[in-house]
Length: 309
Ligand code: RIB
Ligand code: CA
Image (cartoon, rainbow, N blue to C red; front, side):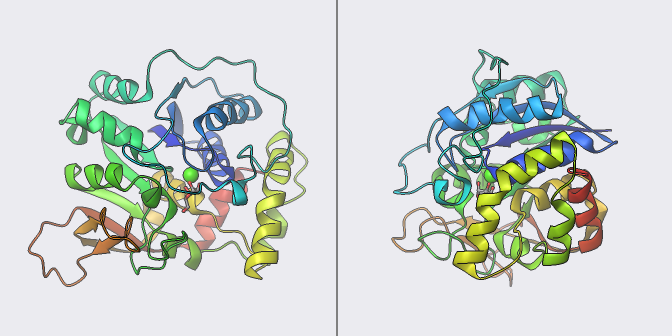
């Protein structure tokens, strides 16, 4: 059984990833720690509670950092995910309550209560994970693994700093702390997301499934599907967080991976938030990232499809 702690900034694709974990027979969601990112924390926390309502999940939810460690970028991702972060679908508020404990403290406590047992998957900016790593420097040795959706390994990002991917760009200092302190994280990049896009025929299968999860998916994803079609001219869906979750749930779907040192650029103007990969091992620095390059697309889609059908 894969015991998951999910650090998240829901976020439409975060919701899809959480649904994938919830329906997977060999996974349990132990806790969710929430961070500001796609939209502010005052939206990402209630969104997480709403997602658990749809799923009937009882996992505890911990609110974390409202913003980056140092400076807030000029824009978040509301233009993609909707101002509420769930496609402006107008879903009813949850009556669930968030835990009192701060997410960073929860990440430390959970690791110390379950040494070597928990898989941490971070699908938002890394602020909570960085804070927890500073609170307990032995954290990387206490989690079974860290899988992140983040980074652009060929400098093809998705933010105004075109070489930077959103989760890293939103908090480069936090990402720097995590990449520097965790010796072997698994990294699912924006380029991997784009090269494993859900195509038109597959997208049709994700829609119009008459069950609470399928109806929820239709409601929250309509805006992002429209955005991709109208702005990017593509009848596809980019499942960044779902791809990271698929790798976490079934690591053997990865068909190509490379271990290299990844540096997070904090100071450049146009390059702030860039994840610079030492592809030729020229820096002499130890590899700190297992970079996922290719996965079995059919199996990825099956895991995504299972979340809504
Ligand atoms: O760049 C994609 C990532 O940024 C995803 O995690 C998405 O939810 C946003 O947080
Ligand atoms: Ca996310």
